[in-house]
Amino acid sequence: MKIGTPTPPATGGAEILRPSSTSGTKLPNAPTGEAAGAGDDTVAVSRLANLLAQGESAMESTPEIDSARVQELSQAIRDGRFRVDPERIADGLLAEMRGLLAREG
Image (cartoon, rainbow, N blue to C red; front, side, top):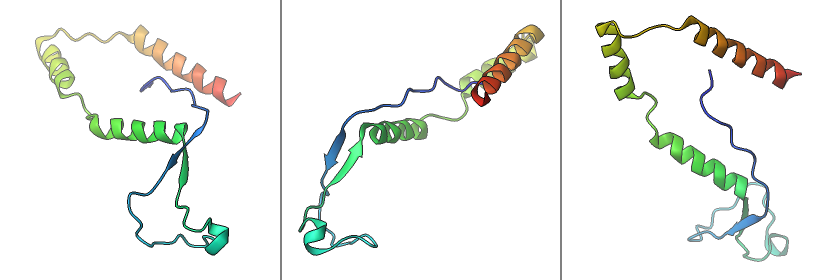
């Protein structure tokens, strides 16, 4: 079952982020003193990391179930308008299996 179109990986430069406040918290095994850059609290985040964060936010705001579509299908079943198309189901299953086999090989 295909859920969505995969997004090609992003490549490119990194973005420099600075903390909004200094909390004094140190990471375990982090260098200190001159080795740490003497107070340089910056982190490089790639565009891919930014895209992943955006995708996560979008997923959190997207409902898992389309209630309107469920109601529409339920009504179609009750009214006798819903038809199962076995050829379409078979075609979809075969296409999914071909895709899985192509990724493995």
